Image (cartoon, rainbow, N blue to C red; front, side, top):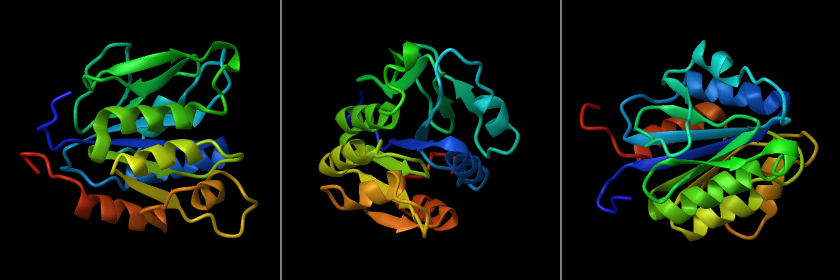
Length: 197
């Protein structure tokens, strides 16, 4: 990967219907004109057809693509994997798809994505953790923090402890905890603009 590039790699993770709603809302208000590549994962059972890309395309401010293994991922696009092919970032900015059949990684897909972005994008990595059950995302968020990247967690509110609160309580500070509009505005301010932005 070009270490002189200013491009950031933003990894978004969540689970369940709330995580889906969060992701849809965030992509609808996503700030345009940023030099960022967006990679998103949600917990989805393997072996099932997913309509996630179709759902997001209805309102996303960015184009939404299902990544192919080895595909060089471009800025200004939101990339997804599939329930059977979990999206991570490769060393040259390409999509690396991990075998997710038989639910091998179902409850660790967010950590896998975040860790890959931390490893290959370093201080240009960004993690955004949305709603979800259990503690997926905590270790990956820590990895992004230790790589010098930015970490954002959607305010968990009064809901039962899940992914957001577990990440907040985990070892490693979070850059910001707040609402989706607040996170979107901070991304606009903190992340690099594209040449045409």
